[in-house]
Amino acid sequence: MLFDNWENLLRILLIGGAAYVALVFMLRISGKRTLSKMNAFDLVVTVALGSTLATVLLDRSIPLADGVLALSLLVALQYVITWGSVRSQWLQKLVKSQPSVLVEKGSYRDEAMRIQRVTREEVEAALRQHGHSSLDSIDRVVLETDGSLSVIPKSDRHQSRRRAWSH
Image (cartoon, rainbow, N blue to C red; front, side, top):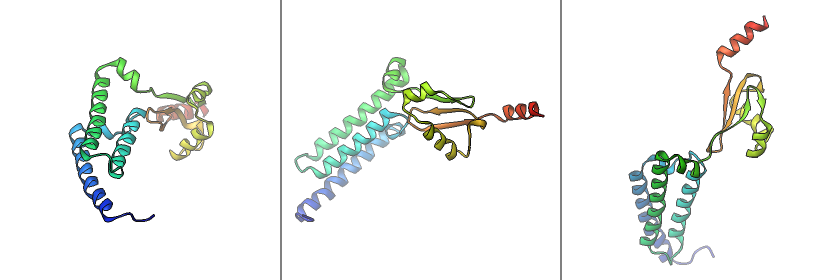
């Protein structure tokens, strides 16, 4: 149950090491963008690469050459799609989402939040993470293409003007 035989362990060490070196080599050639998490598409490719590497390591029926080819295919497809999306608006819209404004000028945009399935509590958690306790000092909260929430405070100019009006 805990140990089958030394041959399996040796195979994992050899195949795993070779597949890892091949993957690192491919990632260095393809550039930083291949493993970025700029949007959901990039995340899917990253997970697929990890899953493929794990399968090559643990499934005896998959030869190293097949695994390296599968990893190469994923890296090549990521490269082609990202290369094309930089050059084609149509392809970019197909594979990437657009940021969504969830709070604007200190007010929740309930329809946008409903469409994006984000709750007020999640927005408030993002505010706290960015050092804000309420919407009073916030211009916008944006759901970015990678799923993170950006909190954009009101500019100092707005704050100064508001303070001047209150006096």
